[in-house]
Image 1 (tube, rainbow, N blue to C red):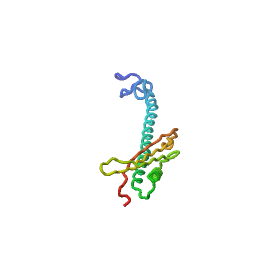
Image 2 (cartoon, rainbow, N blue to C red):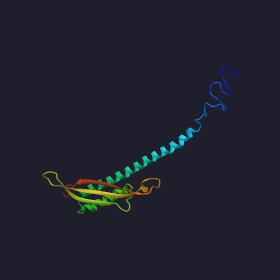
Image 3 (spheres, rainbow, N blue to C red):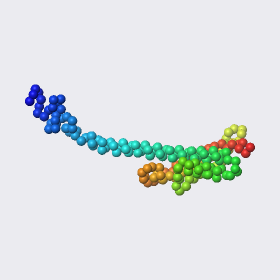
Image 4 (cartoon, rainbow, N blue to C red):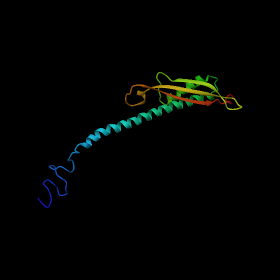
Length: 163
């Protein structure tokens, strides 16, 4: 043995295959695999949860936008049809264009409401949309259940629309 080296020790001080300490040896052997087995699924679950929440928010904002389109279309309509009919058509078209399927069907409630706006009387159309969506339709993987997304919007009726 040369000056101060033990049996199995290499020149740089690490122990070889028969020794204890050094790369790959000791009580920590295999701990990286265990940590990875725990962390990788947890990180994948968090990533999946972020995607699910993002998709749910995207569809929810589409329902809000459909309510806005329905109220605005009904408030500007000059055809003489009821605000309910006009809003329902506009909401269904907006949802269809954005790929949202309500099951069994979308519910649209449109009503003309008076606004207290001072000396000039104003009316508005308020549209409430309720869209039951199967959770399975929102995500890539099969998830059971149903969530009802709602949206509302009020639009002032254009007083000069008939002119």
